[in-house]
Length: 254
Ligand SMILES: Nc1ncnc2c1ncn2[C@@H]1O[C@H](COP(=O)(O)OP(=O)(O)OP(=O)(O)O)[C@@H](O)[C@H]1O
Image (cartoon, rainbow, N blue to C red; front, side, top):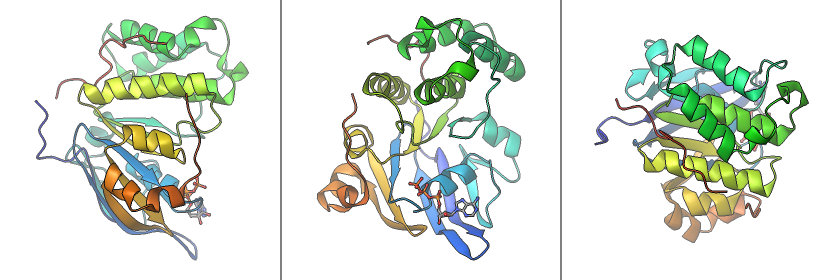
């Protein structure tokens, strides 16, 4: 059973300044476990800045962030252990193959042998098993997204934070990523993502936050927000679109 009393992600008064630019302005979020949550908004709205802070990749100007009850500032290690992150710009060991990079990550995290089966399933569903000898340096943008997702999920985090997981990705790859994320949420995991792909957001996210100018414009169940038309006004519409069950696609038991 999920303990719904502790939010998977709780953000209070998050503020981020870059010099004179107020990128995020006292933003609040409370995302329960097991939620598929979308953050949408126009270019420059503050989505990436918010997710970067939620991942602990940049300390915000002010405000607090808790991951599964752990404060990112004061209980950083415990908070980060709950997180899987997929963001552009995170570096990868370029001279390794997909399996090697996953083995490397499993070693760094001290994972038990179960990682091998999960890695095999993830590589298969994401179609990376077809190129076992290709080095990361040779990967396309879409392939990089997929290996980053596999890396983000390998340790069975309770929360997955994904920044634009479908940007610059082909429809087949998008479909496989969508399938992995659905399985993960069905198994009790929490997904928080930003996306400009409104039909994906409407199809998968249960709640959505619309941000603009660093502020929350509206937040609620996706069908309500979509009915208010704000959702479609705020994003570009794209269509996205093999079935393999990923063993233990969900988070590890608490
Ligand atoms: N490292 C930085 N230094 C200075 N300004 C920044 C930095 N990162 C973001 N910004 C500014 O903060 C604001 C929010 O940017 P952010 O990247 O969070 O928006 P976004 O909603 O993710 O946009 P997009 O949809 O284009 O990815 C923008 O005005 C951007 O120019």
